[in-house]
Image 1 (cartoon, one colour):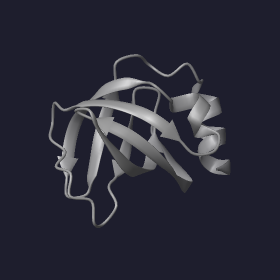
Image 2 (cartoon, rainbow, N blue to C red):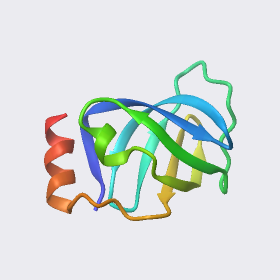
Image 3 (cartoon, rainbow, N blue to C red):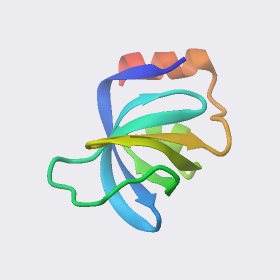
Length: 100
């Protein structure tokens, strides 16, 4: 399942080697949905390589340094599939998403 973050988290990601600020909107053990800032000019495409370099709050320890691939992009939002499933349990993700 995907868990919508009650308070979206700010993060820095690397897409094809370029650092970009994003907002994390939801997470699952397999991936996440992200939003670009309104004035971001980066183009995100399906198949782009992805690494989450830094995330705010509790998400830093759960999500940091997980490489993946962009699986869809639509407007200022895009989805990522992680190469390795997150170690956090479903219950832990649900708890973090509801609190932070």
